[in-house]
Structures are given as C-alpha cells and as structure tokens.
Image (cartoon, rainbow over all chains, first blue to last red; front, side, top):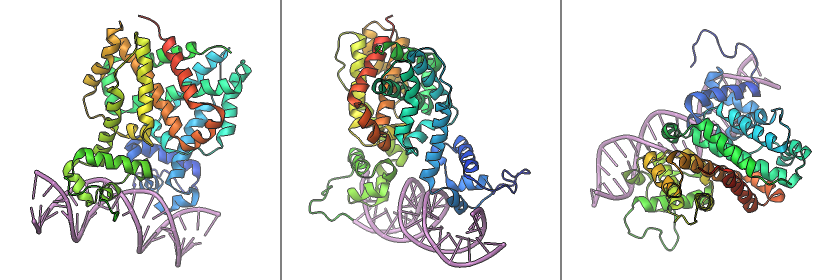
Amino acid sequence: MRQGTKPLRAGSKLDVPTIVDAAFDVLEEYGFDGLGLRLVADRLDVQTPALYWHVRNKAMLISLMARSISESAAHAKVEGRGWRDKLTFQARWHRREMLKHRDSARLMLAAQPLEDPESVAQRLAAPLMESGLSARVALSYYASVVAFAMGWVAYEQSQALHDFLTHMIDFEESFEVGLQAIVAGFAAP
Amino acid sequence: MRQGTKPLRAGSKLDVPTIVDAAFDVLEEYGFDGLGLRLVADRLDVQTPALYWHVRNKAMLISLMARSISESAAHAKVEGRGWRDKLTFQARWHRREMLKHRDSARLMLAAQPLEDPESVAQRLAAPLMESGLSARVALSYYASVVAFAMGWVAYEQSQALHDFLTHMIDFEESFEVGLQAIVAGFAAP
DNA sequence: ACCTGAACACCGTTCAAGT
DNA sequence: ACCTGAACACCGTTCAAGT
C-alpha cells in the first residue's frame, strides 16, 4: 500500500527489531486500539503473514514492545548516593521512557512479561541493596515507586483527563511532589 | 446459546445497568481481551445487535463499566479527621473497588471519561479543601495518591508479575507502606 | 420503542505454495 | 530459510425488517 519514494525496507531482511520499530511507528500514529498487524506489515512493505515467521503472534509482539520500554528504563545507570536518590532516579527514568511512546501504559498492562521476573527483580533491587536495604524492603519500595510512576503516566496518557488536568496542575511538578513525598516517607532500615 | 434452566433475563426488559452487569460477568470469566459483545448478548439471551439500541458501541460500554467502578470508589463516605487521613482512606477504597473486578486497571485505561472531569475533580477535592488544602494542592495530592493506587492494582492484576511477587512481598502490606509514605511525605499547607 | 436476521468490513491466524 | 496468496473464524457494527 505504501508508495513513497524511499522504501522503509529496501531489500534488507526482515527481523524482529525491525518489526518492533515499525510497530512503534504504528502505535504512535494510530494508538493502542489501532495497532494492527496489517498496518505494521504495510509499513514494512511485506504481507501480513510474513510477520509470523519472526514473531509468534500479536501478543508476543506487544510483549516485545513492552520489554523494549522496560529495558530502556532499567538500563539507566543508577546515579545517586543513597537508596532514596536511587529510587527517585529510577522512577523519573521510568516515567520518561514511558512517555516517549503513545499509550505505553496500556501497552505494558496488556503485555505478559517475557523474561522470568525473578532475575528482573534481582537486577533492579541490586543497587538498592548496595545502599543498605534488605532484598525484601528494596523490592517493596521499588514496587511502590514504579507503581506510582506507572499510574501517573496512565493518567497523563488518558486523553480527556490530560486535557483537563493540564489546566489545573502541572504534571511535571505534581509528579515530582508525589515522588519526593513517597521517597521521603519511606522508613530507613 | 444458553440453555440453563433459569434464564438470566426472564421476560424482563433489557436496559443499560443489566447490560453492564452482564459485561462484568463476561469480564470476570474471559478477561479484558475476551470481553466481546457476542458473549455479553449470549449471557442475556439476546442477539448482539440488540445491545446497540441501549449502548452506542463497545467503547461506550467499556466507559460505562469504568464509570461504575469510579463511582463506587468515589461514593465512599470519606472518613478521617485531617486531609492525610482522607487521602489514605480514598486510596484504600479505590484499590478495593478496583480489585473487585478482573483486569479493572486495563479497563479503566481503555475507557474515556463520560462525565466532564471538572465536576468530578471538584467533587473529589471538596473534602480535602474542607481540611485546609487549596484546590490546587488538593488535586495534586489526590492525583498522586490515586495514581499510586491505580499503578499498584495494575501490578497486582498482571498475572505473571503477581505470581512471582507473591513470593517476595505482601501486596497488602507493601501497598500500605507505600501509601503511608506518600501521605506522610506531603507537605502541610 | 425494542429486538431479530442477515450482511459487511475488518482483524488475527493458518497453511499450502512459491523462491 | 523466508515470504506470498488465499482462505478461515471471529469480531464490531449497520440496517432493513419484524413486533
């Protein structure tokens, strides 16, 4: 269907990262409800069934997209001295990465984790444990902070809510206020 | 398709609340991805197009379901002395109501608000303002606390995540810890 | 006013067939 | 190995027709 002058996939082979990238483009343009395999295929100048050679199904594609976001958020070099600074940093980074994509909150909730959650938890909690938190407390605090960021982004991406709240509160500022509150409120070990 | 002994809708007329109830049943059984109009119609012993006389489309049905949850959460008589107690109470209530339905987080993110957000905000912020917060700060704090609850529920309902985290943290307890932290961390006016 | 029957466009997915 | 062509089941939605 595309007939632009420069093909998006000029002779190059189709692979998973390319498909995921195209899917993000479709997501940006049509939103989560409009994310369809035919549109992704069109964008790559390929027939729809071609995607199935590389990706098991649409659910898997969504999971791959979600993982791509999670990885960007997790790959942040955790700066900061104590565990409070680290938590703050991680929450900000999480929000930033999610806001890069339209409807990312809905996307992540629809996805099913690909890697086993145990190793993920291990990796994410590690820097906090270096700062003196137990594994248990580190995970608990981390979960709270990420839940906060996720919920906040969900609100920012809910069109109607966003349009209104923009007049009442400053998202950036209120997010910071809430984040500072929760991190400051956590008890020290 | 149903052929049980007691029909779910014995001669009674079809109306919106009945449809919404049936939709919740389908949601409970098949999850958000399996929520289909044909299943809702089957459950009411009605042909699918019959639903369209009462509800504009599926998006509207989803919005009605989401509003049903929001209203339950908002209709809570806000107990508590100061604004901190009120915020805590509202967050708990929000989580409770959401957890009553499977995939409620995904449902609410897919829905588009029906009532105009301005009056909703007004109503929700009112009790906080009676306790001394300005409209601006009340909304900001409220948004943070509800975002936290929403994000937390999203994690609890993410099957794979839930299965694992259950072994590591106690949801009830960690939610409380996070909630107490954020509320305690908010600055007084 | 309220619901049925039949149809349409669209989507995810499968699979034989091509190269 | 990698992709096309054609098909299938299913879904949201529309609409004329019934009562």
